[in-house]
Length: 205
Length: 293
Image (cartoon, rainbow over the protein chains, first blue to last red):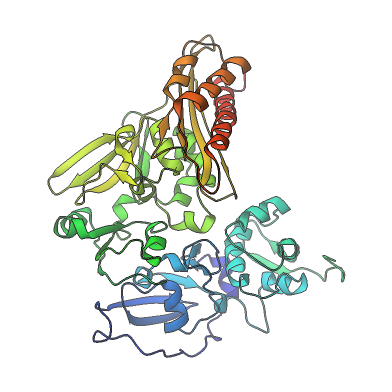
């Protein structure tokens, strides 16, 4: 996980596991495999069936339902998470493949009281409507903004071209990213220094 | 939907993977980046009973020079790794050109060079690029290994010469001659989507700026990468002018390819696009071959 993101990764807001009937070898057709991984800075050890998708593992086994599942074949981008710091579609990976790896899901980014500037910008610029695509879009944009802290509109639209939003027409999402880029001052090594000053009250209107 | 159950192996070496494939070859699928295989498994279009996950074979994730000043790319080099690699940009700019046009950023985080080749999707940029660059692939079984030129590797729709117990280990690209320029252009319905038509061009100029060798390789117009031979013949020895490049592009679109129709585009439209794109690719490749001078 990139160091500069560290300040924003929180592990104290993880909901308790929702326990669906646990998998066991009698119930399932194939055997289970023990995996150990880190999600939002918490270490987990679980047994999973090899066919369990990473998206389902996060939602059903860990109760992290902020990772949304839209199309389940890699088109909509709703299930995007950061896997070792890279944006990936969690519906196109098996949970067993996350063994030994580090994951950031939307629950790990900021807290309700202290949102990441990008999350805050989505609220302020009305980048959220139904919210289904939001977590995937935000996690896609985190590494993008690290690499390109001052993107123009075209670059932003290109960056989220793998995420489908059916509410906003993307305009307010683009506004939110522009707003976030203004809020985040980044030093040369990419570390987020501060949240900038207040922005004009009618920004994006 | 969810994938059907399967038995899972995660070998950490090539030898181990080959042993898995030797035992289960016909019922097994190799899992590389999984960005095509897992969607098919989610839809249950693919229901392999054994998965051999080669993601832990880190020795296959290399990008390096070969002995002749060309390039070697390991099967498990991921697209985003290849996309930003300076050696790839210096030795095979066509690959760098292709990368941003391959799927989305999320897919490029996982997708691998070898997986893209082995999948043999007729709309795959890297298949056409490999043919255009005279690449070859290293395949190995427990029985031995072989090098297969890219233009002999793809034999049909999602079909290659790979045997069930065979693993693709990497690709080799010879050094490009001096005064060579490359370009890849495509048209897709959305930025990251499968191309309706795409073409890779490689142009080598002689000292008088005449075309010493040209290669146009189309994708999404047939069962695999399609080499436009007649167009290339037409350009050989010619000066590359608007007229000669237009003529070659038209020949390519009319005579070298036989695209099909589907819900996204008619054959006629694909042919039209092929002509336009071939011209653009040639022009871009020519300018790059000639250099800034």
